[in-house]
Image (cartoon, rainbow, N blue to C red; front, side, top):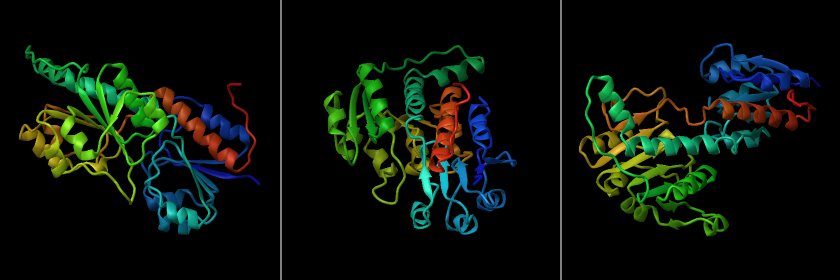
Amino acid sequence: MRRNIFITLQSFAEYSDVPLLLLKNAGVSIRLNTRKHRLNQSEIIELGEDSDGIIAGVEPYDKMVFNKLLRLKCISRCGVGIDSIDLKEAERRGIAILNTPDVVVQPVAEMTIAMIFNLLRLLTYHTNLLKSGEWRKRAGHLLKGRKVGVVGLGRIGKRVAEILGSLNAYVYGCDLKVDSEWLAGNNIKILSISELLCEVDVLCLHVSVSTDNTFFLGKKEMAQLKKGAIIINTSRGQILDEGALYESLVSGHLGGAALDVFGEEPYSGQLVELDNVVLTPHISTLTKESRIEMETQAVENILEYFDVPYECPLS
């Protein structure tokens, strides 16, 4: 049976033709996202008609979509986050949900570390001064000896903690479940969330979004942070109160923030006004190397699910 595969990603195979060649060589029927933007539910239904499988981005898959895509058996997510998918409804209908969690670890970890250095050494701040014609200097801080808290010790949080430890920062962690074997091999101190917030100079958020036990950094939690602390969020925009963050930065309680994710994207809120904030348009996983690997794995996942034989074009 010839399988119909719908690729929703607007820039699929932009950096390498390997993922697309994998599909073509496997003999499946391919439909691409011709709209060149993130699809909404109606567009998924319109373009994904008769699809057996979808290679997906972060567009929404809810009951309305599942009600219309009656042939759909598998969603292969190009990336790690699956919170835009109604997992209970997918399970009820027997739709497999696959993702590529390992690929995103290194690029997001590197982005997090880059953001920390940016804020500690005031890189964007001094760049903007110089571009405006001012030769003016402010002293920054070393990462060595800083107390850094990592909220969420999954794959990415662990990697961030490991890198921070190798850079001689004091690393504190917090999670609902901690990998005791990993912890034994790393010099990480585990604290409760309230203890961690009061202790650290830098707070890194690496938590997922779920219906149960979701961490949220709001006005109350920000007030617990030390004066001058900085916040890094490369996980999910929904876990942070952007309005409370703005107020805490303007008041001088917090020293800075770096965000790659936002409650609503594209972002156009008040944080763009502040010179102690670094903002990027959700690019933590966007390196050429990781993008190629992510797309290739997403293709391999869906072909293996449908038991379609394939051969890597590079072999």
